[in-house]
Amino acid sequence: MSIVFRSAGSLALTFGLLACGGGSGPSEVSSSGANSSSGGGNSGGSGITLTMLGGTTGTSVGGSASAGDGPANQVVTKLPPGYTQTDVGGYKLGEPIVGGAGAPGMSGGGSGGAMSGNCGNILLGVSRDFKGADEPMGHPDFNADIAGGDVTPGLVSTTLGTDQKPIYTSQCEIGNAMPAPTCPYKAQTTSQANFDQWYHDTPGVNEPYLVSIYLAPQPGGLFTFQSLHYFPMDGAGFMGMAKANDGKDHNFGFTTELHTQFLYSGGETFNFQGDDDVWVFINNKLAVDLGGLHPAQLRKVELDASAAMLGIETGNIYPLDLFHAERHTNASTFRIDTNLSFVDCGTVLPGKVK
Image: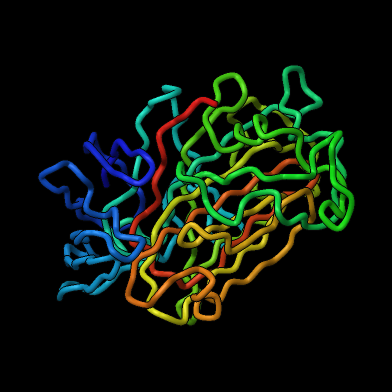
């Protein structure tokens, strides 16, 4: 796999190697230095060569893709060494991301089908640890005296930002919360400046780490990650600990961010269950809105039924961007069930200080 410099909407110079999971075979790199796994996303784009599983190549024209002949696809059937076993699947906390503004991002990149490709059924993302509001110099949105209850929709825009981050639109701020039905559970956030730190590297405020999530193969072509006690930052970050509902001390107060792409063939589903905030964007449009402090909630997306709203057509490659925040004790649930065919292993955007 390749480590690449990436800005929103583009890929640039290949820098080194990054193992993302099972399988072998390098990413294709164009003469301009662009990683060929960048896919398409929207109709009307230029042709892009894709490295499919086992060295098979396909071509993306205007976001569409077709695979040539090649070896059969492979799936990582057992949890790789070094991963933490969860209820289903597992995760591995990687190296801290350093460098601040302008630091290079890293991309798993490369093969077609992260569910059945060279990086295996493993996605690469970022987890950022925060101090709680009850700690010195803590973040006011984490472990704060904020009411919860159920989902508060509308905390972010229905369209992903040009920097591939959620756009803050919350009208449920402390001291200025709109009444129900806009804010059924009162204030959920504090300010745009504080929210922007959730998914941007901010020295002294958060500590970002790479995280790999292994989705275990299930009968019927489904892949699942489930952790009823999801605490990837245990033993890392600011080391703030609190008692969880499993009776153990864990490091609460963190976010998780995933950026990947998938080939839409028809019939796919994406289900997420979690607490607290979760937003999933497909083709830059909000497909799952589980904002606010709440117990574990489930949302299901049937892509065929949502195709018109999402602006997607079969045969094309589209981005999927997931943002999660664990903001309060005493539980942390994180579950993904999907049969999507991912065409990259996950991309880490450049660090940006807000």
